[in-house]
View 1 (spheres, one colour):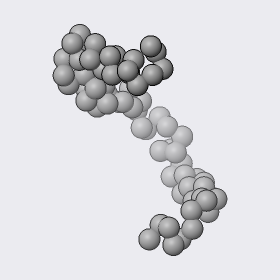
View 2 (cartoon, one colour):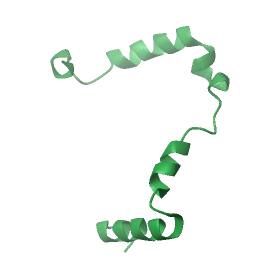
View 3 (spheres, one colour):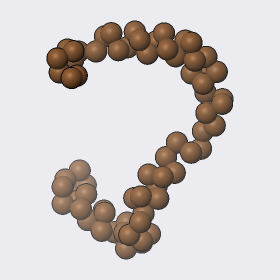
Length: 68
């Protein structure tokens, strides 16, 4: 039943039985912790990150009215 709601619920149940009730919160906490931010490109070039972030924001499909 993989790929169905029932299969997903059974997987959750199995993971909690095997690894404990806090399994999903622990893997969520670990997410991204394996990467050092100082080695990332945007961390090294904040002015370029600002520039490209502005470009991406301007291409947003939402209107200003929806954002407020």
